[in-house]
Amino acid sequence: ARTGAPRFTLLREQMLIGGQWVGADSGEAISVTNPATGEVIGTVPRGGTDETRRAIEAADKAFAGWRATPAGDRAAKLHKLADLILANAEELAVILTTEQGKPLPEARGEIGASAAYVRWFAEEARRLYGDVIPSPWAGRRILVTKEPVGVCAAITPWNFPSSMLSRKIGAALAAGCTVVCKPAELTPFSGLAWGVLAEMAGIPAGVVNIVTGKSSLIGAEMTSNPIVKKVTFTGSTPVGKLLVKQSADTMKKVSMELGGNAPFLVFDDADLDLAVEQAIASKFRNVGQTCVCANRFYVQAGIYDAFAAKFAEASKKLKVGNGMEEGVAAGPLIDEKALKKVESLLADALGKGAQVLAGGKQPAQGGTFFEPTVLKGATQDMDFAREEIFGPLAPLFKFETEEEAVRYANDTEYGLACYFFTKDLGRAFRVSEALQYGQVGVNAGVITTEVAPFGGVKESGVGREGSKYGCDDYLNIKYVCLGGL
Ligand code: ADP
Image 1: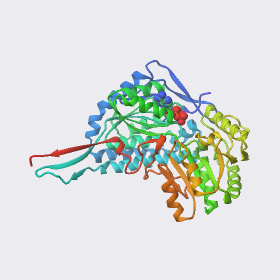
Image 2: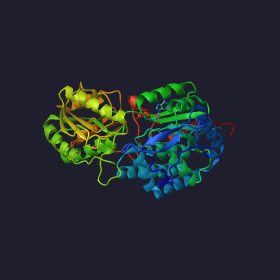
Image 3: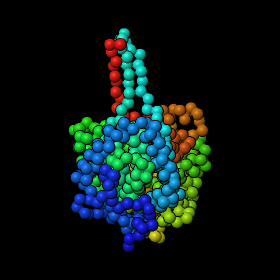
Protein backbone atom coordinates (compact mmCIF):
# COMPACT_ATOMS: atom_id res chain seq x y z
CA ALA A 1 0.00 0.00 0.00
CA ARG A 2 1.23 3.46 -0.82
CA THR A 3 0.09 6.05 1.65
CA GLY A 4 0.99 9.50 2.71
CA ALA A 5 2.73 11.19 -0.18
CA PRO A 6 -0.24 13.17 -1.50
CA ARG A 7 -1.10 14.43 1.97
CA PHE A 8 2.16 16.31 2.33
CA THR A 9 3.12 19.51 0.56
CA LEU A 10 6.74 19.34 1.79
CA LEU A 11 7.42 15.75 0.79
CA ARG A 12 9.69 15.38 -2.24
CA GLU A 13 10.61 12.14 -3.98
CA GLN A 14 13.51 13.70 -5.87
CA MET A 15 17.01 14.97 -5.05
CA LEU A 16 17.95 18.65 -5.07
CA ILE A 17 21.05 19.38 -7.15
CA GLY A 18 21.96 22.93 -8.13
CA GLY A 19 18.39 24.14 -7.70
CA GLN A 20 16.86 21.32 -9.80
CA TRP A 21 14.71 18.51 -8.40
CA VAL A 22 15.92 15.37 -10.16
CA GLY A 23 15.76 11.58 -10.13
CA ALA A 24 18.67 9.15 -10.25
CA ASP A 25 20.55 8.80 -13.57
CA SER A 26 19.55 5.13 -13.55
CA GLY A 27 15.90 5.98 -12.91
CA GLU A 28 16.02 3.63 -9.92
CA ALA A 29 14.34 4.45 -6.63
CA ILE A 30 14.37 3.19 -3.04
CA SER A 31 11.13 2.64 -1.08
CA VAL A 32 10.73 4.27 2.30
CA THR A 33 8.46 2.57 4.80
CA ASN A 34 6.63 3.63 7.93
CA PRO A 35 8.18 1.57 10.75
CA ALA A 36 4.91 1.60 12.71
CA THR A 37 2.82 0.07 9.93
CA GLY A 38 5.22 -1.36 7.36
CA GLU A 39 3.44 0.69 4.66
CA VAL A 40 5.41 2.36 1.88
CA ILE A 41 5.33 6.15 2.28
CA GLY A 42 7.05 6.92 -1.03
CA THR A 43 10.35 6.51 -2.83
CA VAL A 44 13.60 8.43 -3.23
CA PRO A 45 16.12 8.24 -6.08
CA ARG A 46 18.92 5.69 -5.83
CA GLY A 47 21.64 8.23 -6.55
CA GLY A 48 25.34 7.39 -6.64
CA THR A 49 28.76 8.70 -7.62
CA ASP A 50 27.82 10.87 -10.63
CA GLU A 51 24.86 12.58 -8.99
CA THR A 52 26.99 13.31 -5.92
CA ARG A 53 29.76 14.76 -8.05
CA ARG A 54 27.31 17.06 -9.81
CA ALA A 55 25.90 18.16 -6.45
CA ILE A 56 29.42 18.95 -5.24
CA GLU A 57 30.11 20.94 -8.41
CA ALA A 58 26.85 22.85 -7.95
CA ALA A 59 27.81 23.65 -4.36
CA ASP A 60 31.21 24.80 -5.58
CA LYS A 61 29.63 27.09 -8.19
CA ALA A 62 27.34 28.61 -5.56
CA PHE A 63 30.12 29.09 -3.01
CA ALA A 64 31.65 32.34 -4.30
CA GLY A 65 28.30 34.14 -4.27
CA TRP A 66 27.16 32.82 -0.88
CA ARG A 67 30.50 33.57 0.71
CA ALA A 68 30.38 37.14 -0.63
CA THR A 69 26.82 37.66 0.66
CA PRO A 70 27.06 40.03 3.64
CA ALA A 71 26.71 38.27 6.98
CA GLY A 72 23.55 40.24 7.77
CA ASP A 73 21.90 39.03 4.56
CA ARG A 74 22.88 35.42 5.21
CA ALA A 75 21.48 35.86 8.73
CA ALA A 76 18.21 37.21 7.33
CA LYS A 77 17.81 34.15 5.09
CA LEU A 78 18.46 31.83 8.03
CA HIS A 79 15.88 33.71 10.12
CA LYS A 80 13.42 33.26 7.27
CA LEU A 81 14.26 29.55 7.20
CA ALA A 82 13.65 29.25 10.96
CA ASP A 83 10.29 31.06 10.51
CA LEU A 84 9.32 28.64 7.74
CA ILE A 85 10.22 25.60 9.85
CA LEU A 86 7.96 26.90 12.60
CA ALA A 87 5.18 27.85 10.20
CA ASN A 88 5.26 24.30 8.78
CA ALA A 89 6.06 22.55 12.06
CA GLU A 90 3.01 20.34 12.18
CA GLU A 91 3.45 18.91 8.70
CA LEU A 92 7.19 18.43 9.27
CA ALA A 93 6.47 16.62 12.56
CA VAL A 94 3.96 14.31 10.87
CA ILE A 95 6.46 13.50 8.07
CA LEU A 96 9.06 12.77 10.75
CA THR A 97 6.81 10.45 12.77
CA THR A 98 5.61 8.72 9.60
CA GLU A 99 9.10 7.82 8.41
CA GLN A 100 10.89 7.51 11.76
CA GLY A 101 8.27 6.25 14.24
CA LYS A 102 8.83 8.55 17.22
CA PRO A 103 5.71 9.77 19.06
CA LEU A 104 4.27 12.93 17.49
CA PRO A 105 5.01 15.12 20.57
CA GLU A 106 8.68 14.08 20.32
CA ALA A 107 8.65 14.84 16.59
CA ARG A 108 7.20 18.27 17.31
CA GLY A 109 10.01 18.75 19.83
CA GLU A 110 12.61 17.81 17.23
CA ILE A 111 11.18 20.24 14.67
CA GLY A 112 11.23 22.94 17.35
CA ALA A 113 14.89 22.10 17.97
CA SER A 114 15.61 22.35 14.24
CA ALA A 115 14.17 25.85 14.14
CA ALA A 116 16.09 26.76 17.30
CA TYR A 117 19.41 25.66 15.79
CA VAL A 118 18.79 27.61 12.60
CA ARG A 119 17.75 30.67 14.64
CA TRP A 120 20.84 30.35 16.79
CA PHE A 121 23.14 30.18 13.78
CA ALA A 122 21.30 33.08 12.13
CA GLU A 123 22.36 35.07 15.19
CA GLU A 124 25.89 33.66 15.18
CA ALA A 125 26.37 34.52 11.49
CA ARG A 126 26.77 38.18 12.45
CA ARG A 127 29.29 37.49 15.24
CA LEU A 128 32.06 35.53 13.55
CA TYR A 129 34.67 37.97 14.77
CA GLY A 130 38.39 37.92 14.12
CA ASP A 131 41.22 39.48 16.19
CA VAL A 132 43.77 42.22 16.01
CA ILE A 133 46.81 40.93 17.89
CA PRO A 134 49.41 43.30 19.41
CA SER A 135 52.37 43.13 17.04
CA PRO A 136 55.87 42.16 18.24
CA TRP A 137 57.28 44.23 15.34
CA ALA A 138 57.30 47.98 14.80
CA GLY A 139 55.50 49.02 11.61
CA ARG A 140 53.45 45.85 11.33
CA ARG A 141 49.92 44.86 12.29
CA ILE A 142 48.63 41.35 12.90
CA LEU A 143 45.08 40.59 11.79
CA VAL A 144 43.17 37.34 12.18
CA THR A 145 40.02 36.65 10.19
CA LYS A 146 37.71 33.66 9.84
CA GLU A 147 36.85 32.39 6.40
CA PRO A 148 34.36 29.71 5.33
CA VAL A 149 36.12 26.41 4.59
CA GLY A 150 34.20 25.94 1.32
CA VAL A 151 31.98 23.10 0.17
CA CYS A 152 30.90 20.86 3.06
CA ALA A 153 29.50 17.34 2.86
CA ALA A 154 27.03 16.27 5.56
CA ILE A 155 25.89 12.71 6.27
CA THR A 156 23.13 12.25 8.86
CA PRO A 157 21.41 9.34 10.62
CA TRP A 158 17.78 8.26 10.92
CA ASN A 159 17.22 8.86 14.65
CA PHE A 160 17.01 12.69 14.38
CA PRO A 161 16.52 13.18 10.64
CA SER A 162 15.61 16.84 10.96
CA SER A 163 17.61 18.32 13.83
CA MET A 164 20.90 16.61 12.92
CA LEU A 165 20.76 18.35 9.54
CA SER A 166 19.85 21.71 11.09
CA ARG A 167 22.94 21.68 13.32
CA LYS A 168 25.08 21.13 10.25
CA ILE A 169 23.27 23.18 7.58
CA GLY A 170 22.65 26.08 9.99
CA ALA A 171 26.29 26.33 11.05
CA ALA A 172 27.66 25.84 7.53
CA LEU A 173 25.42 28.47 5.95
CA ALA A 174 26.08 30.95 8.76
CA ALA A 175 29.81 30.52 8.19
CA GLY A 176 29.38 31.15 4.45
CA CYS A 177 29.84 27.56 3.30
CA THR A 178 27.67 25.64 0.83
CA VAL A 179 26.58 22.05 1.48
CA VAL A 180 25.81 18.69 -0.04
CA CYS A 181 23.72 16.60 2.35
CA LYS A 182 22.96 12.92 2.41
CA PRO A 183 20.11 12.03 4.75
CA ALA A 184 19.78 8.43 5.97
CA GLU A 185 18.06 6.13 3.50
CA LEU A 186 15.54 5.04 6.16
CA THR A 187 14.35 8.62 6.80
CA PRO A 188 15.11 10.77 3.74
CA PHE A 189 11.92 12.83 3.59
CA SER A 190 12.70 15.03 6.61
CA GLY A 191 16.04 15.76 4.93
CA LEU A 192 14.54 16.48 1.50
CA ALA A 193 12.05 18.84 3.17
CA TRP A 194 15.08 20.97 4.06
CA GLY A 195 15.59 21.53 0.37
CA VAL A 196 12.01 22.73 -0.10
CA LEU A 197 12.28 25.06 2.88
CA ALA A 198 15.66 26.42 1.77
CA GLU A 199 14.14 27.29 -1.62
CA MET A 200 11.15 28.95 0.07
CA ALA A 201 13.54 30.97 2.25
CA GLY A 202 15.25 32.35 -0.87
CA ILE A 203 18.55 30.62 -0.26
CA PRO A 204 20.22 30.63 -3.70
CA ALA A 205 20.31 27.51 -5.89
CA GLY A 206 23.30 25.28 -5.19
CA VAL A 207 23.86 26.51 -1.63
CA VAL A 208 21.94 23.53 -0.22
CA ASN A 209 22.03 20.30 -2.24
CA ILE A 210 20.52 17.01 -1.11
CA VAL A 211 21.34 13.61 -2.54
CA THR A 212 19.85 10.23 -1.71
CA GLY A 213 20.79 6.69 -2.61
CA LYS A 214 23.64 4.28 -2.15
CA SER A 215 25.43 5.52 0.96
CA SER A 216 28.81 3.89 0.30
CA LEU A 217 29.05 5.41 -3.21
CA ILE A 218 27.83 8.84 -2.08
CA GLY A 219 30.20 8.76 0.90
CA ALA A 220 33.15 7.69 -1.26
CA GLU A 221 32.62 10.63 -3.66
CA MET A 222 32.11 13.11 -0.83
CA THR A 223 35.31 12.05 0.92
CA SER A 224 37.53 11.77 -2.18
CA ASN A 225 36.42 14.76 -4.26
CA PRO A 226 39.03 17.51 -3.74
CA ILE A 227 36.36 20.23 -4.03
CA VAL A 228 34.89 19.13 -0.68
CA LYS A 229 36.82 20.78 2.14
CA LYS A 230 34.94 19.38 5.10
CA VAL A 231 32.99 16.25 5.99
CA THR A 232 30.54 16.36 8.88
CA PHE A 233 28.96 13.10 9.98
CA THR A 234 26.59 11.89 12.67
CA GLY A 235 26.18 8.14 12.92
CA SER A 236 27.87 4.97 14.01
CA THR A 237 31.51 4.77 15.07
CA PRO A 238 32.57 2.24 12.38
CA VAL A 239 31.17 4.40 9.55
CA GLY A 240 32.73 7.51 11.12
CA LYS A 241 36.14 5.86 11.22
CA LEU A 242 35.77 4.79 7.60
CA LEU A 243 34.88 8.35 6.52
CA VAL A 244 37.87 9.79 8.40
CA LYS A 245 40.18 7.30 6.68
CA GLN A 246 38.67 8.10 3.28
CA SER A 247 39.02 11.84 3.95
CA ALA A 248 42.71 11.56 4.83
CA ASP A 249 44.00 11.53 1.24
CA THR A 250 42.64 15.00 0.55
CA MET A 251 43.19 16.15 4.17
CA LYS A 252 39.64 17.33 4.73
CA LYS A 253 38.48 18.86 7.94
CA VAL A 254 36.19 16.39 9.72
CA SER A 255 33.54 16.61 12.43
CA MET A 256 32.33 13.30 13.78
CA GLU A 257 29.43 12.76 16.16
CA LEU A 258 29.63 9.03 16.77
CA GLY A 259 28.35 6.42 19.16
CA GLY A 260 28.01 6.68 22.91
CA ASN A 261 27.67 4.35 25.86
CA ALA A 262 26.24 6.81 28.37
CA PRO A 263 26.49 5.89 32.05
CA PHE A 264 23.79 7.16 34.42
CA LEU A 265 25.03 7.10 38.04
CA VAL A 266 22.64 7.33 40.99
CA PHE A 267 24.33 7.92 44.34
CA ASP A 268 22.74 7.11 47.71
CA ASP A 269 22.33 10.83 48.38
CA ALA A 270 20.37 11.50 45.14
CA ASP A 271 16.86 12.95 44.95
CA LEU A 272 15.17 9.64 44.11
CA ASP A 273 12.07 11.02 42.37
CA LEU A 274 14.12 13.38 40.22
CA ALA A 275 16.54 10.57 39.32
CA VAL A 276 13.66 8.30 38.27
CA GLU A 277 11.92 11.01 36.24
CA GLN A 278 15.13 11.92 34.42
CA ALA A 279 16.08 8.26 33.95
CA ILE A 280 12.80 7.66 32.10
CA ALA A 281 13.38 10.68 29.86
CA SER A 282 17.04 9.86 29.27
CA LYS A 283 16.51 6.18 28.52
CA PHE A 284 13.19 5.93 26.72
CA ARG A 285 13.12 9.06 24.56
CA ASN A 286 12.93 7.86 20.94
CA VAL A 287 12.71 4.33 22.51
CA GLY A 288 16.36 4.55 23.43
CA GLN A 289 17.52 5.34 19.90
CA THR A 290 19.75 8.32 20.59
CA CYS A 291 23.52 8.42 20.99
CA VAL A 292 23.12 10.25 24.32
CA CYS A 293 20.47 7.91 25.80
CA ALA A 294 21.46 6.41 29.14
CA ASN A 295 22.92 3.00 28.31
CA ARG A 296 24.18 1.74 31.67
CA PHE A 297 22.56 2.61 35.00
CA TYR A 298 24.98 2.35 37.95
CA VAL A 299 23.04 2.64 41.19
CA GLN A 300 24.62 2.76 44.65
CA ALA A 301 23.78 -0.18 46.94
CA GLY A 302 21.83 1.86 49.51
CA ILE A 303 19.31 3.22 46.98
CA TYR A 304 19.39 0.35 44.46
CA ASP A 305 16.16 -1.44 45.39
CA ALA A 306 14.15 1.76 45.83
CA PHE A 307 15.37 3.17 42.50
CA ALA A 308 14.75 -0.13 40.71
CA ALA A 309 11.18 -0.39 42.01
CA LYS A 310 10.22 3.18 41.11
CA PHE A 311 11.94 3.13 37.75
CA ALA A 312 10.25 -0.16 36.80
CA GLU A 313 6.86 1.16 37.91
CA ALA A 314 7.26 4.34 35.84
CA SER A 315 8.47 2.35 32.79
CA LYS A 316 5.34 0.20 32.83
CA LYS A 317 3.21 3.33 32.37
CA LEU A 318 4.77 4.21 29.00
CA LYS A 319 2.24 3.42 26.30
CA VAL A 320 3.65 1.54 23.32
CA GLY A 321 2.18 2.10 19.85
CA ASN A 322 2.05 4.05 16.60
CA GLY A 323 3.56 7.47 17.27
CA MET A 324 0.58 9.14 15.59
CA GLU A 325 -1.77 7.87 18.32
CA GLU A 326 -2.65 10.03 21.27
CA GLY A 327 -0.80 9.20 24.49
CA VAL A 328 1.86 6.95 22.93
CA ALA A 329 5.27 7.36 24.58
CA ALA A 330 7.14 4.52 22.89
CA GLY A 331 7.03 4.05 19.12
CA PRO A 332 8.50 1.19 17.08
CA LEU A 333 12.20 0.53 16.69
CA ILE A 334 13.48 1.74 13.34
CA ASP A 335 13.84 -1.72 11.78
CA GLU A 336 14.14 -5.47 12.29
CA LYS A 337 17.92 -5.22 12.82
CA ALA A 338 17.42 -2.84 15.75
CA LEU A 339 14.83 -5.18 17.28
CA LYS A 340 17.14 -8.19 16.92
CA LYS A 341 19.92 -6.30 18.66
CA VAL A 342 17.73 -5.51 21.68
CA GLU A 343 16.51 -9.11 21.83
CA SER A 344 20.03 -10.51 21.69
CA LEU A 345 21.37 -8.12 24.38
CA LEU A 346 18.42 -9.10 26.58
CA ALA A 347 18.95 -12.84 26.01
CA ASP A 348 22.65 -12.48 26.81
CA ALA A 349 21.86 -10.66 30.09
CA LEU A 350 19.14 -13.12 31.15
CA GLY A 351 21.51 -15.99 30.44
CA LYS A 352 24.03 -14.38 32.80
CA GLY A 353 21.56 -13.88 35.65
CA ALA A 354 19.76 -10.55 35.09
CA GLN A 355 16.08 -10.34 36.06
CA VAL A 356 13.26 -8.50 34.27
CA LEU A 357 11.48 -5.91 36.43
CA ALA A 358 9.41 -4.35 33.63
CA GLY A 359 8.72 -5.18 29.97
CA GLY A 360 11.06 -7.79 28.53
CA LYS A 361 9.08 -8.71 25.42
CA GLN A 362 7.31 -7.50 22.32
CA PRO A 363 3.79 -6.16 22.90
CA ALA A 364 0.76 -7.68 21.16
CA GLN A 365 1.13 -5.54 18.02
CA GLY A 366 4.45 -7.23 17.14
CA GLY A 367 6.21 -5.43 14.28
CA THR A 368 9.37 -3.78 15.56
CA PHE A 369 7.72 -2.66 18.80
CA PHE A 370 9.36 -3.60 22.09
CA GLU A 371 8.21 -2.87 25.62
CA PRO A 372 10.25 -0.46 27.76
CA THR A 373 12.34 -2.91 29.75
CA VAL A 374 14.11 -2.61 33.10
CA LEU A 375 16.62 -5.23 34.22
CA LYS A 376 17.94 -5.84 37.70
CA GLY A 377 21.22 -7.57 38.47
CA ALA A 378 23.25 -6.32 35.49
CA THR A 379 26.96 -7.16 35.64
CA GLN A 380 30.08 -6.04 33.78
CA ASP A 381 30.35 -9.32 31.83
CA MET A 382 27.05 -8.66 30.01
CA ASP A 383 27.31 -7.39 26.43
CA PHE A 384 25.57 -4.07 27.08
CA ALA A 385 28.34 -3.09 29.51
CA ARG A 386 30.40 -2.43 26.36
CA GLU A 387 27.88 -2.08 23.52
CA GLU A 388 25.51 0.72 22.72
CA ILE A 389 21.97 -0.69 23.13
CA PHE A 390 20.05 1.84 20.99
CA GLY A 391 16.75 0.46 22.24
CA PRO A 392 14.35 0.46 25.22
CA LEU A 393 16.46 -1.68 27.54
CA ALA A 394 17.62 -0.27 30.90
CA PRO A 395 20.14 -2.43 32.78
CA LEU A 396 20.70 -1.60 36.47
CA PHE A 397 24.21 -2.32 37.79
CA LYS A 398 25.02 -2.03 41.51
CA PHE A 399 28.06 -0.21 42.94
CA GLU A 400 29.41 0.50 46.43
CA THR A 401 31.84 3.44 46.24
CA GLU A 402 32.23 6.66 44.23
CA GLU A 403 35.64 5.51 42.99
CA GLU A 404 34.12 2.27 41.69
CA ALA A 405 31.26 4.11 39.95
CA VAL A 406 33.63 6.46 38.15
CA ARG A 407 35.87 3.57 37.11
CA TYR A 408 32.93 1.65 35.60
CA ALA A 409 31.57 4.78 33.95
CA ASN A 410 34.89 5.48 32.22
CA ASP A 411 35.53 1.85 31.27
CA THR A 412 34.47 2.28 27.64
CA GLU A 413 36.06 3.54 24.44
CA TYR A 414 33.18 6.01 24.13
CA GLY A 415 32.93 9.47 25.69
CA LEU A 416 29.83 11.33 24.49
CA ALA A 417 27.35 11.99 27.33
CA CYS A 418 27.02 10.89 30.95
CA TYR A 419 24.70 11.68 33.83
CA PHE A 420 24.84 11.45 37.59
CA PHE A 421 22.57 12.23 40.52
CA THR A 422 23.75 13.48 43.88
CA LYS A 423 22.92 16.27 46.33
CA ASP A 424 26.50 16.52 47.56
CA LEU A 425 28.21 19.61 46.12
CA GLY A 426 31.73 18.24 46.53
CA ARG A 427 30.79 15.04 44.74
CA ALA A 428 29.12 17.03 41.96
CA PHE A 429 32.47 18.68 41.19
CA ARG A 430 34.70 15.64 41.82
CA VAL A 431 32.67 13.29 39.65
CA SER A 432 31.97 15.72 36.82
CA GLU A 433 35.72 16.38 36.57
CA ALA A 434 36.60 12.67 36.73
CA LEU A 435 34.17 11.54 34.03
CA GLN A 436 35.81 11.33 30.59
CA TYR A 437 32.91 12.64 28.55
CA GLY A 438 32.16 15.63 26.34
CA GLN A 439 28.83 16.30 28.09
CA VAL A 440 27.85 15.79 31.71
CA GLY A 441 24.37 16.10 33.23
CA VAL A 442 24.40 16.58 37.00
CA ASN A 443 20.89 15.93 38.31
CA ALA A 444 19.73 16.19 34.69
CA GLY A 445 19.14 13.38 32.18
CA VAL A 446 18.31 15.29 28.98
CA ILE A 447 20.69 18.20 28.35
CA THR A 448 20.84 18.90 24.61
CA THR A 449 20.15 22.50 23.59
CA GLU A 450 21.26 24.72 20.72
CA VAL A 451 23.07 27.06 23.12
CA ALA A 452 25.44 24.38 24.52
CA PRO A 453 28.25 22.49 22.73
CA PHE A 454 27.29 18.96 21.68
CA GLY A 455 30.09 16.49 21.06
CA GLY A 456 32.28 13.77 22.45
CA VAL A 457 35.78 12.69 23.39
CA LYS A 458 37.60 9.37 22.84
CA GLU A 459 35.98 7.29 20.07
CA SER A 460 32.73 9.25 20.28
CA GLY A 461 34.20 11.72 17.84
CA VAL A 462 35.67 15.13 17.20
CA GLY A 463 34.15 18.60 16.86
CA ARG A 464 31.28 20.41 18.56
CA GLU A 465 27.85 21.31 17.23
CA GLY A 466 25.56 24.09 18.41
CA SER A 467 26.66 26.88 20.79
CA LYS A 468 29.13 29.68 20.09
CA TYR A 469 31.65 26.97 19.10
CA GLY A 470 29.38 25.41 16.48
CA CYS A 471 30.59 27.52 13.53
CA ASP A 472 34.30 26.92 14.28
CA ASP A 473 34.32 23.60 12.43
CA TYR A 474 33.15 25.39 9.26
CA LEU A 475 35.73 28.17 9.41
CA ASN A 476 39.43 28.47 8.64
CA ILE A 477 41.52 30.94 10.57
CA LYS A 478 43.55 33.27 8.38
CA TYR A 479 46.45 35.35 9.69
CA VAL A 480 47.30 38.49 7.75
CA CYS A 481 50.54 40.34 8.62
CA LEU A 482 50.39 43.94 7.41
CA GLY A 483 53.92 45.28 7.12
CA GLY A 484 55.64 48.44 5.86
CA LEU A 485 53.32 50.74 7.80
P1 ADP B 1 23.15 3.62 12.14
O1 ADP B 1 23.74 2.35 12.63
O2 ADP B 1 22.72 4.54 13.20
O3 ADP B 1 22.20 3.47 10.99
P2 ADP B 1 25.15 4.45 10.27
O4 ADP B 1 26.47 5.00 10.64
O5 ADP B 1 25.09 3.14 9.56
O6 ADP B 1 24.37 4.45 11.62
O7 ADP B 1 24.32 5.50 9.41
C1 ADP B 1 24.43 6.87 9.55
C2 ADP B 1 24.52 7.49 8.20
O8 ADP B 1 25.69 7.02 7.56
C3 ADP B 1 23.36 7.16 7.27
O9 ADP B 1 23.06 8.30 6.50
C4 ADP B 1 23.96 6.08 6.41
O10 ADP B 1 23.34 6.02 5.13
C5 ADP B 1 25.37 6.56 6.28
N1 ADP B 1 26.34 5.53 5.86
C6 ADP B 1 26.37 4.23 6.17
N2 ADP B 1 27.43 3.63 5.59
C7 ADP B 1 28.11 4.59 4.91
C8 ADP B 1 29.28 4.62 4.10
N3 ADP B 1 30.01 3.52 3.87
N4 ADP B 1 29.65 5.80 3.57
C9 ADP B 1 28.94 6.91 3.78
N5 ADP B 1 27.82 6.95 4.52
C10 ADP B 1 27.40 5.81 5.08
